[in-house]
Length: 366
Image 1 (cartoon, rainbow, N blue to C red):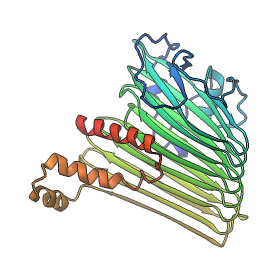
Image 2 (image 1 turned 60 degrees about the vertical axis):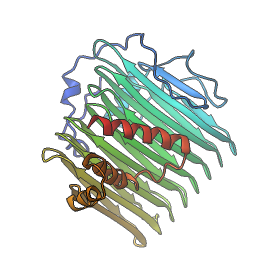
Image 3 (image 1 turned 180 degrees about the horizontal axis):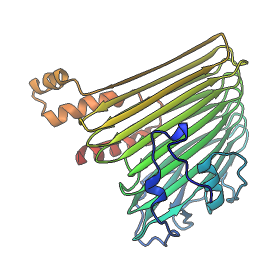
Image 4 (image 1 turned 120 degrees about the vertical axis):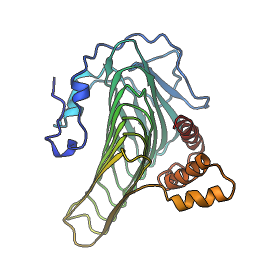
């Protein structure tokens, strides 16, 4: 089995996987508990402990059978996934088809530690459209190591909205590789609330002129949670915009990480790349590591990045309290306003409602 990456690798310097390597994970057990499914009228894929449950899933016209793949790259987590993948979605939307929305639900629970490695593939034909609403939840100690291979053809649009609300004893590592063709768009948002240790890593290749990547995230962590959001956007064609906004709210002894890299090839003139990371530390023991990178080989580009780390403005808290708002509610209002920019890509009403409910649940636990 391929070894887990260590902090000696630059890409993993802020995230230590020794908690995973020191845990003995068995095979996923049969899941007895009834899953918590959202009441939404969309086709759905329901995975229980990493295996598609046909009884709980519904038909989707563009679903294909799962097929294992041979991994060609050198990325350690992808190699581990390929060696262990047993199930996953395989969606192919034909040219010109608006496939609407689909739910991807993963629910996990077990009495002893176990691991599963979903392998997902999503392919959109020219001018096609699809929205994926992904929800990851669970109880107990487990490791989900998921990988998405995404291909968005010319003029197509894929919206991918993720809620990571795993067990706070679990580990979640999700790798996403997206290829975005001419005039196509990949719009992504991840809300991270769960897992003891999590990492979302996205590699987006803009390979056609005017291709768009919009990668946003919000992390709300407490206790001793560790959350890592890492991105690489490769501009390989002219006139391509990319946008990244990552907001982190950290309480207790939580640690957040954002690594964002924008690569601009020599051919990619007129690139417009924007990247911003901001963190609110609600505790003196919380920690945030931010590492923005720009690698530019073209001479006619507009690229920018920024990063801020701070605490809530006590003057703003006092102002709201002076208007009769309780302190806890005042802080919640300010934090919610802080997160608003990251939520901008989520224009889909049903998805936004899911995130709003999850945020309300997080407030209640702090």
